[in-house]
Length: 546
Image (cartoon, rainbow, N blue to C red; front, side, top):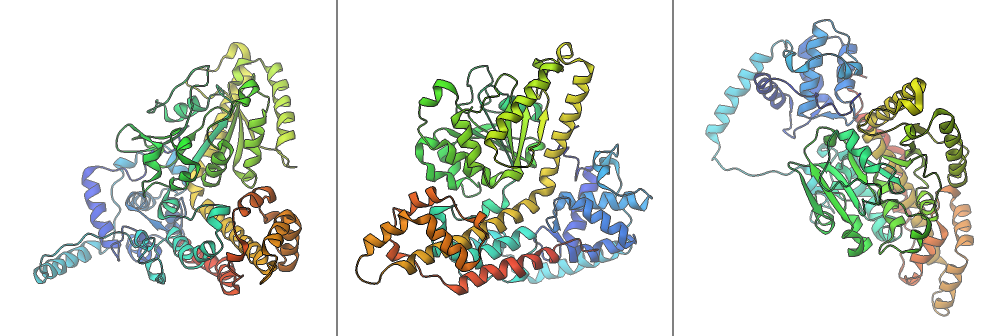
């Protein structure tokens, strides 16, 4: 089973020309996106039933972005053609035996006449124009510029769920974050590239548990900067992503590129950025998913050697950005070291993203594997403080055939099923990317709202004249009690409050007297966003045939 097959939008050169002309015609506002209203007008010419067109849209817009790009549009047209032939439309067609390159364009009633009229009108308008040309940038990219960030952005500028989130962030959430220094305490301010980034998968584990080999196994090839060996070979964070050619980009360079979502890593300093690089290569899987390979977590005596940067802080930063976190173990490295324990603790709040992989499981026989699995669950039970059982995938994720001499036929069948399940989980990531972004955005909004209440409360507790320094120190010392007051006064969920010790550490560098008072209008704007704007946004960009 492969993920990211790359067949979506593939067709012959002759058909590509036809689809490009159709796409330009259907794209009413020339923004490179076919929205629901565009689709209703254009797809109607196929004379398919509404239930069929609903299924076509749901299959083509598998990521639930609320629009179709050119590749998705081509795929939708191929599905329409198959539906006209009487084929049942479903997501299974993407994994079936259909040769999409040989699927002919569908019959669109009256489209030829409309295209001819458009050509005639474009010729007449070209004669009237003075020949001046201008380059356009996407509206969403302009929103994040300093000049336009203060302007109110109209709903008509929004053509997707992600664009809608960008607008809501700039108008309602970012002002709250800036006013109460949210970027210093919790997370840096979001940029355009943070919203547009591809889904990410991070691999964590001790050295030689097969993290780099796992990525190579999925890509079915090596990537720039990949080193594999029994010793700790990966000594840096490596982001493996799509690019026009094969190359490695140093961390300091990648962190300042505006089109990359890694600007927030500059807070960890040059010591980290020198241990960070981006590996780019053209690959169909990397067009859908970005992988984050990490240095092996230290164990034993090595833990006494301090890293030059905040390893736990970096993993926590990536965890917030990632869609899936894979914790890799092998049968001979089941112990959870102190550093690994700190790393897993830093993942709290992202429990739904965590999957455990027991790799190299064909190195032991079936009886030993049963004992190893039990020992792994016992070790994890002490660290993952949750009543739910974490999902564990068992297998040997490399390019070598399974060692049947150790596992036997039953073990081989188990590994194959487990691998199918894990690959299926990975395959769902691009489809769930939009839902994940909404989820992370709502989590961020709630965290920012609680942060504003805390800062506003500390400001209110400060005296107006005498004893400011003494009062500030008292508030810092009794921070947990102050959190309790904020929680009771505003009826906020206690589980949403930040870590007291980390908050206290950042707070000690501030003068409380310079904090902003709580602004109810800002809080109300975020409440309105969560209660009305986001549900309305999702309603606007749902399947147009619902």
